[in-house]
Length: 322
Image (tube, rainbow, N blue to C red):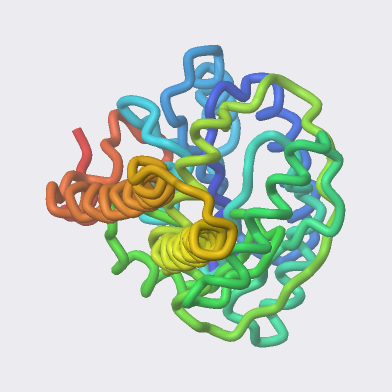
């Protein structure tokens, strides 16, 4: 393959994926074989505790296009994706998961859209072969985010996407610590296309994306790209006020018309009960925003690199290494 061929960078965060890695590698080789592109497959080992690193080392030893970054610990999927993109040098950059739920055979279709002039190509999950709870909560979350976000964030779109080098340059300049790349890419506003695919069931290993991590990622999306929590507090407050006023009207009517006597503590207890709950919600929302400000103000690196392999360039000083 000519050295003048356009370069595609595939960025893949990895956490305990020793079984999936060889299958994904072969799938990507097959998918990219006839595309007329040079390639680099950038795997980011995000604190794996199984034999993932051994598998990566073997792949890198036999194929120079396989490159890997080893982080000092588990920094999370969004940080690992950021690390891989910081190292990427491609004209096209594809980010995807390692668990084979993002099919490698979709990459050529994404490239076709990019060649039509689109700077961003989103892969949307038309069908998810997952449990009812996962599908239901995902549908609810994306529905709320799509409706209330100040930036147009599309539903059922994860981190399986293609961006061009122009988009990558702008994305690298966004160094906030609480990262929600799905929203950040959408916020940039480049012209985009969406292709649909069926998301298969995970075949190997267990997901490293626990319920807690999913909640944290969801909160990052809502807090960074939506005023929904503040608006939700307003809605709950209005409902509380309306309910309290209605009850107050009822007991007032009952007192003056039916001569029913309500002791003062009964009047106060209902109103207090309603508004204590309202205040707790508002305090929680304010605390979340303050927490985000606190994390940003610490200005810690998004990730720390322990080791890298098959990279021919030095990373910029602003992206820390050991």
